[in-house]
Image (cartoon, rainbow, N blue to C red):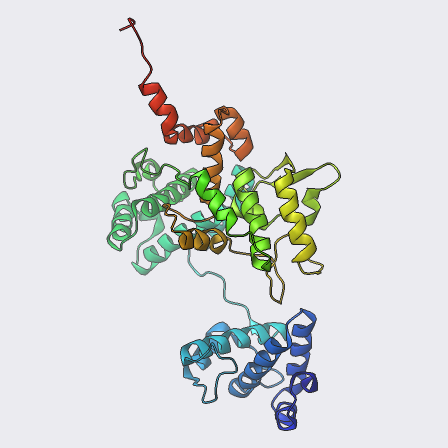
Length: 414
């Protein structure tokens, strides 16, 4: 394998005689099978060579992430970094840590991190099971609430307090401290909501004093403070115009943007879209709703189908992965972040919206449908909202309709 990566004989000999040469060779073969380019294989081979030397592994050595981090902090690369971007030792050490972790995981020598240790960990686990099985909440909601609860319980344990003797003032102190650290009112309110749901469940189980949940109050949020604001439809057209090139990234991003803007999909619904969800014979697209745990079927609009077909034919790599949108460089894997696809392009165009991410196109889609005269029920069904109360907020941002109402002449009625 080393002969396929290096051309100089001295480099080949150095890697063959280095520590754990057989293990490093198997790792590089694994990376090649994943589709890494020769240049990337060269860089990874150099790093894994230094990892093997610095970690001083034996046939029975197993290391944890903390041990890898400790070695990384002591390590300073005296060689020139194997690629031009890594000209700072900080970046070089970070790559060293990532390669060490990946290589040890490949060899099954990475000790998994210890589970979250807290005397009340069982409470959080039972609360999580209840939200999933009893309430049917989404994984993201469950993860966010559990994160807030763990953060709260860690603070309680460090303070030497017992959960059964907690009072409302202890919770208020934590929420006030969060606000003093620069957290927004919305963030603190989310913290309070998570604690309220947790303590409500704890009260039902008899783990804490009754009455705490109903008394937990977060900061006041004004009803119209968080109105959904997206770009104008003319600005959405400008955004789509930036992808009118033959560059692979623009072809892929055009398919993503037109899905977000046409159907008002959430970012997660686009990221998890599968090839099997595209029914070309019936001209339909199946969207797996991340919140409702159901599937919605939409007609495959011609502009959407053309954009996706061009991406599939000209850009998408020929791999076994069934997720539609993948990275453009090996190792090919599903996209995990769509924010640059929207946010970076809006920034370059000088279009300013409060939250310039994929979700702003969902707001733009709803506002456009409302301006076209669609009813709130039709918009609710199109966006996949559970309740029309969620959709009703868009009526407040339809300024043109509000102006028509303000100009309505009541005549002699008043």
